[in-house]
Length: 318
Image 1 (cartoon, rainbow, N blue to C red):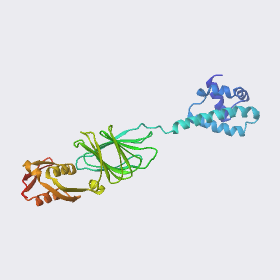
Image 2 (spheres, helix red, strand yellow):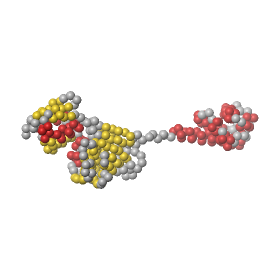
Image 3 (cartoon, rainbow, N blue to C red):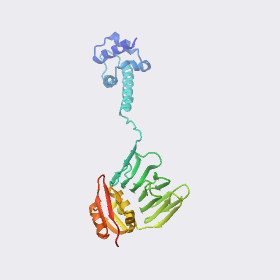
């Protein structure tokens, strides 16, 4: 009997139009033969599902004049085969296809800051002029990210999966804690400052462990690692929008302001860069900061130019 003939007999059986002779032919196909021909019997998966449902009902309610035991055997074989086929199809269709891991890159311009939440719940505050690379989900035995610039991390606790930050030649490893990493390319130091918990900071040459209010500094020129106590509040001022200068040369002050506000300064008199500034600014506008500086240093003036440039004129008279 061909596949088309089997299909035809099954349709007649399900519709109740099958003759006794045709029933006898179909009864001759036991479960093994039906399974062998499974790929050609059903038109599609919807058909397979319908067959399974109707045959299951017909097992309990056989046609008149038909041997109950014979049709139970045949119908059960068909029903089981159809049901199994449908279940396999359903599992294949409903199973979520695992998407590939995607690397996400977030970058802040000078004068811009950004809050991020990673897949594991870790909170990140990205400072100006910084780049963080991280996956859309963490797999394996490690949570790995890469940082250029500066960021504060409040890491979600997971004792079984350490959180690792690659920053140049330094690797910072934690299980769940909060800390700051400063690794700007134009600086010859990489600084890690811990707010809570415990952090391991390692290079190829050495490693140190840091606790709250401790800062580890890796010198990229000498490849040396040092540790010291610090005021964590001062170290994290940038996160709160606070700029603090304590007897700092104006040249260094201007470098900080460039990063903070996304501008560039031009010194008309290079010697003016030697002026020392002591001041604190809490989320102030750049114009307010500049007015404060020229007020404190009477010999200085400033002028806004095009393309976000600011000209510093004059010299210190104090």
